[in-house]
Image (cartoon, rainbow, N blue to C red):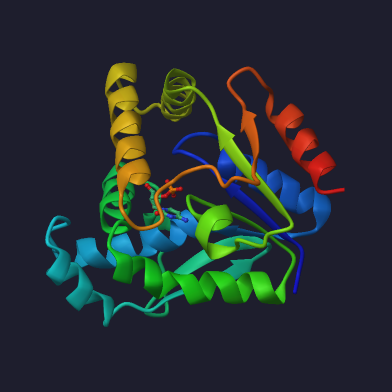
Length: 218
Ligand code: DC
């Protein structure tokens, strides 16, 4: 059994930035479970599936094989042996992942892959239900959050820096809708595990958050 650090929290809290830095400082492997749900979402989009139609989603699961690999230490997602990593990070895929991840069979499909990685290696795994459902015995659990406005502002700055025009109020509304969906679904909703450390990064720098988590791992 490797060392398991679980980081959960809402969209835009900075989980992946922080988890990657902690992983590289501690020599752990970074596992981004949201990317796995996004990998399945790409499959559903390619098949033209209606995200509200649960039976279509379940039927499409049989033809999806999601796998994870690493190239120069960077996580790659394979869908039926095709590397689809570059297709994962957009709003359409994120929303499809948020809606379809509420389906218990979708979650069940990814559970074993996630647990196997944590059994075999020292990992920082980030997601929504890592501390509560996937790795209930993780060595350290973090619930990383920030106010909805802080998260919207970070996303706004990120898109603006890339020259993508956007509206901060629309981003905030999207984040709030995603939080609502992730926190209110019946199966494995996003919530803080009782034994997780709560870190609110609204007023913290990235380095401060990373240092605090590293201290908790010592
Ligand atoms: O972290 P992310 O934005 O890449 O995740 C996309 C969606 O996947 C998120 O809105 C909810 C779902 N997800 C989940 O249900 N459980 C996880 N462990 C990770 C992500």
